[in-house]
Image 1: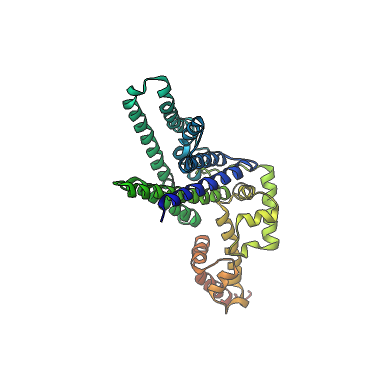
Image 2: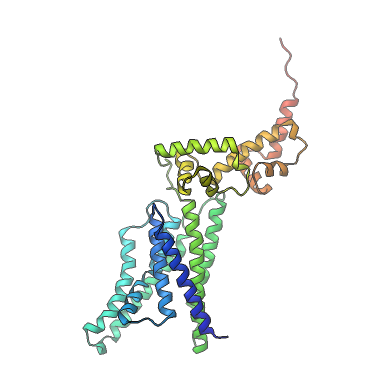
Length: 354
């Protein structure tokens, strides 16, 4: 097995995938901060993998690619901040920290042309120690971003995303840091491990970015953002769609499905839910409608013989556990207790007229 050939192939796959993601991102209308920093990261990792995989000439082009690759770790950190912090989490000092790495690489490249190379050994070592320290720091910070602001248990998809993100990032960073390189064979395996880690990081970041663009984080404030006239109008259309076509009864319903029905972008539907309807998020909004449907079925005498599970499935829940949790959170009662309470109320004799 030619480890070097496999490593080169994986690097080229990462470079091509990142380049495609970059082009797709740049062609999107209505870009947000996450789009911009995601494009920076994709461009940087694509150039990094190309520089490692192929001989690049002339030298000035190789040097430019080397400087641009300095934005890989820092760009990923900026993406992580946008993924897991609401509002506008990127400030000037965050950008300066990323720029410091690229500047360190640029200085290290240009100094030999200005100063006698024989006197640069110590300076070169110092610059690379600085670049390595800052790059390692921002990767640790990227991992930390997935931990801070941990959501409550009602945000199941958000929690699953964070577990996936933390597992992949933690595993890749740890593996690339502690893997030994005592001989040439181990060094070749280490390079393959780094290439595979880059592919894994790009994959999990792509999933996380797609998820966040569909489900934006709202600022953790008591007062929700004010809705515009367009968002109020879209919220009214959404309410009519839910009432007339009951799409919430589909267990696999997603924001994208509603967006297609309303012929509008996903993020506008999300804003209509959170700002126009003042709902916490898409899942809570849809589950509330499902619970209302289930409450009516549980109190309907014609449905008395049907099991709680069938009622849950008919109401749009995929399984009994989420249904029970959502129902109790809404009513303070289990579905069984709700049904029993309704039966008891209807069986009580009415008072005789005076």
